[in-house]
Image (cartoon, rainbow, N blue to C red; front, side, top):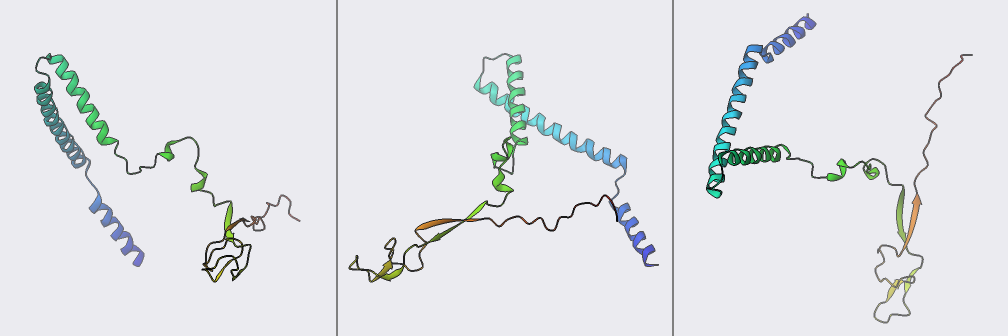
Length: 162
């Protein structure tokens, strides 16, 4: 009985969201009509502006300029991109986005933090770089190798069964 109720609710939900093809076509025609009206108003505005800037131009030249300017405006409106990163449009893959770093870097001091005999104003410092801060970043760099990849979880398919 519960399954019948769930199925009935799904059917009712589907019928509520269903749009009649005639209503869909009417909605499409209405939106197309609105787009054409907006474009007509835009063309009229551009034509008046172009005629004001170029009063001696012929009607053919005005029509061509209006067509070009409206095309450019529509193209610019369609090219608005939410992703400003242009590196995704190259043919060279950016492996830094997909692969983990190959090596980790660790800084260390090769000396010892002890009383300093060279500098008079500082009491203690690292013997390697004379840095007076004990918790400072090291002066030497060590590349730590990445952990090796383990293939133990992979199994080969068996061809013959024994």
